[in-house]
Length: 127
Image (cartoon, rainbow, N blue to C red; front, top):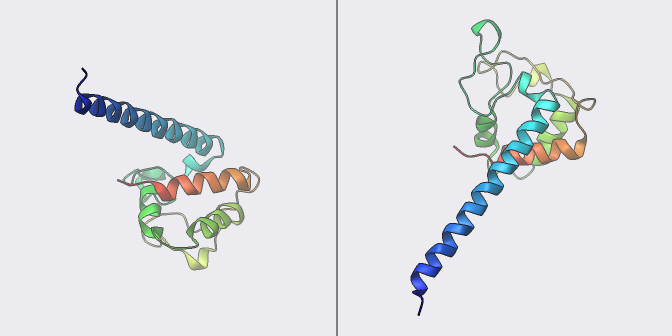
């Protein structure tokens, strides 16, 4: 007779490996979308990536975005709108942390559906 504890542990290991594989596949898919849409020119996943000439990075790291907007009810809709329409240089949320003054509108570079997917992925990032 088989040991039910070992069978449960084996099943848990398989489920965990499948979940990790799915997460890696999603990460790869979103990074490919971000690269194709030009997002990588100003943003990275982790903080510490210098901008041009050693200045502060142009845009905030996505882990910082995720942390800043965690739990905010309208974050997905608001950030998707910012991606599509751009942001105002007079209302910078990242003043002193990045060298860019505003996010340009990106409606020509990414569809709203893809922007929503990408923003959802960014908001789900964790360290």
